[in-house]
Length: 148
Image (cartoon, rainbow, N blue to C red; front, side, top):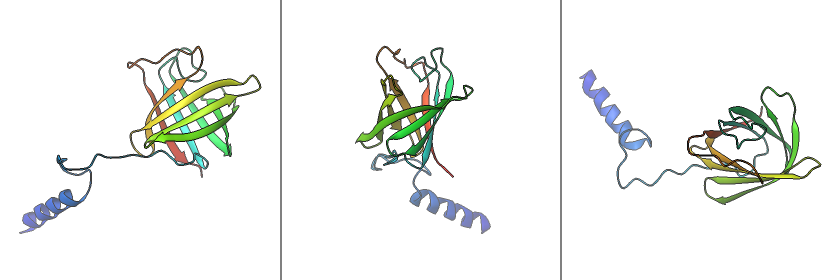
């Protein structure tokens, strides 16, 4: 009797909880989101590509914080230096965010495009004039987190 109860309970859970059990053809596609506003979050970028900030030889981890509206600061882990950046943030389509950024007094422009996998993680591309283009063999992933 106990085995039947467990079996029935498992079958009921797999039928009603999304992500458990096999997907059906009539299930709607899963949709993830990017934050509506990055304020109050931090962003961790990891890349194994020459096209990530301050990492011409690849393999870097960068921490980004958003201390004020339209202002971010980033530090490549291990460098100890925070860099000030102004940015605009947009979401041109669901699950995609674009940070159009200008760094420092020299006005260096670059763009981060985030494409979500989950509501907190995803892939990103870094584009800047003269920067190397990442290939599909490279990794460039992000994670958003709330500041405490």
